[in-house]
Image (cartoon, protein in one colour):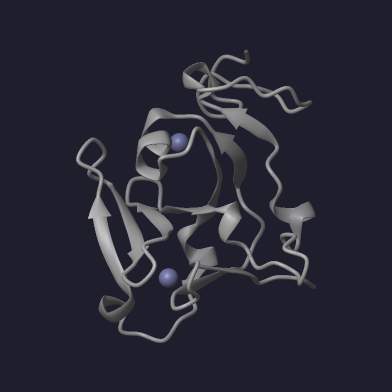
Length: 150
Ligand SMILES: [Zn+2]
Ligand SMILES: [Zn+2]
C-alpha cells in the first residue's frame, strides 16, 4: 500500500500527507490559479479534509502563513514562511483541500512518486488557458463532469 502519499514545500520545513487518492486531479487553467501561482496552469488535486493531515511538527504558526482569497473568502491558502511555496488551500464550503502535484515526494531522479495515483485526468477551466495543450486528456470549461466539455 503506497498511501499515505506525502508532499512538502521547496525547503522541506512544512509537509502534508493524504490518506486516499485525490477526488480530483487536473491541470487547472483558472485565472485564480494563474495569478496566485504566477504560472499559466497548475496541477491541482482535491482531497477530502478528513483524508489530509499536516505532517510537520506543530505549531503551524511557526511554519505557515495564511492568505484568504478576497474573491473567495471560503478559501484559505497556507504558505511556507521560509521558502514561500504554497502547500495547500482549504475550502470551508466543500470541506476539501487543494494541494499541488509538483509538491509530491520525488525519487532520486526528480520523478514524482506514485504518479499513477496522483496524475491529472483532465484539464479544467481550459477556457481561460494561456496556452494550448495538445494531449489526450479531456478539456473542460469549468470543473470536470460539471461544465461544458471543450
Ligand atoms: Zn518551505
Ligand atoms: Zn484553478
